[in-house]
Image (cartoon, rainbow, N blue to C red; front, side, top):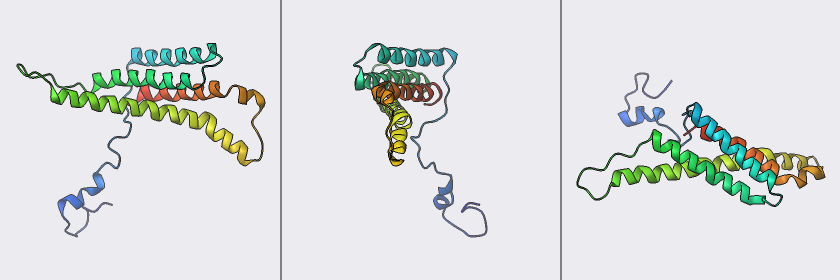
Length: 165
């Protein structure tokens, strides 16, 4: 039941308040086509290969993954939300540049949010859970910390880039 039902007279803006989106900037479902999903999977596999081949990749691989998936998100958003064409005779396209900046900010936010979520789910939460139980992680997991973080980051970035905008 919302505010617009019943016999109580309310202002139109109040009656429609229940239908407003709470977070209009949240990720929205927009799956890539098959070629785009393969492109995202290849990027995730390449970033994992980069982490595995370099013993000292550390945080650089995480940053590189977020940058690569930020670029993939931007590429996808530029096709989904096209900037309007410039009017003939005008030197600049202010409306188009606004859409491009919005796409840049949104793609960077999607990639950084997905990367942070992957790190949280694959390393921070398990480490906190083990610490809360009064135990420690096995030495093999501690040595493979960045590999585990990178696995979570690649998986979450792949899911977000392939299926959301």
